[in-house]
Image (cartoon, rainbow, N blue to C red; front, side, top):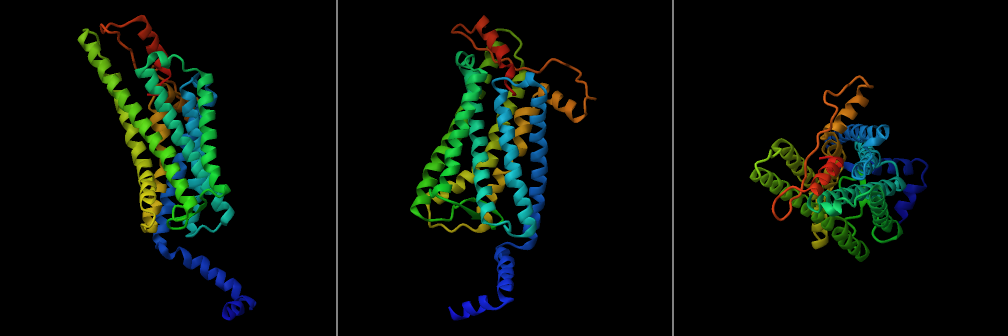
Length: 360
């Protein structure tokens, strides 16, 4: 105690000690490693801001694109943009410096923002998958989709996610530095019962259930599209194989990218919940969060730019109005349903026209 008090009482020692601590702490990871992470996150930030900013600009400049289904895409773009600004951009700067140098308050804010908007993004994807499942597999339920229902669903998502993001601010778990100490998230390393109970319920309600819903819905969509194609061929009609293949490829891309981005984070959550005493190296603990931060780059490409109508509108914005689409009619995917005798009905044709709002 005497030596410590002597050190802090001298005029120059406190500054030298503070400087030493600030520079020595992040040596758990090589300096070149921080530089590589900073560069990768810089690329990720630029792509995230550009892609999602483009989606928001296009949809706001073209009100006709704001349909009950595409409102989910707009919400997804907003939440992904905030992940890029509050998460990827901050991590780019802190990795460049080699430490989280902007203070505890900023650390808590970043952990809260990334947790909140990440959950909003994940739950929006879940809601989008569920509504697509209704339109394709349960067309009568799909016809009930309206702008009011979409807005109510999004309000529920934002409030639900806000609860789980705010809870750590009031003592149920907490936010703090993670991994290589250049980003902040939930305090996964805290072994208290409060944090442990939060992680168990959080993992179940905010990861496992949404992932299960997404997988189930898209698997049903794939099955329905394949049945549709075979039924049309059996009736001697044109199978629309090109449109069907396009839809299947988009659904597979959604599932694959979702797993690439979120499965490592979910796996880390489960490992910590199942074995709280397990030691996880800092780099291993950090990488799942970085994978999750790449999802805002892929989402606009898969959910928005893969549709010709939206892509033409985006090219018009990027080219400042110089781009003129060759074919003004949008590419649609016929998602007709069949009765017990496998005959097309007029009701199914209404479903086909309604499915144009699906950004598949």
